Length: 62
Image 1 (tube, rainbow, N blue to C red):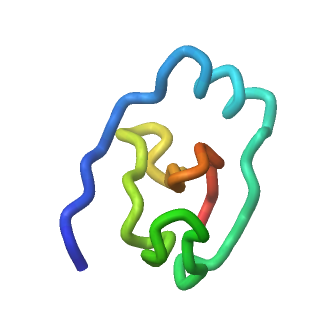
Image 2: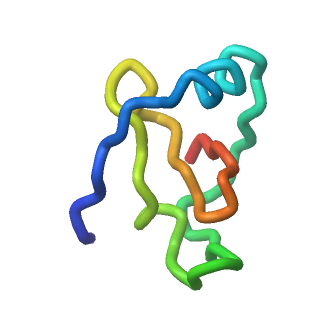
């Protein structure tokens, strides 16, 4: 598995996280934009390390 950058959420993303604008999905899902697994997308630093960011901007809990 390749290393993924661990960004800090932007203020806009923090608002979305606090509002619950996150959905659950399998890490084996294929991203429609790039064709890679959700597992291969970046995730946030602690304390939001359970949230991945897919290419279309969705916040996904794997």
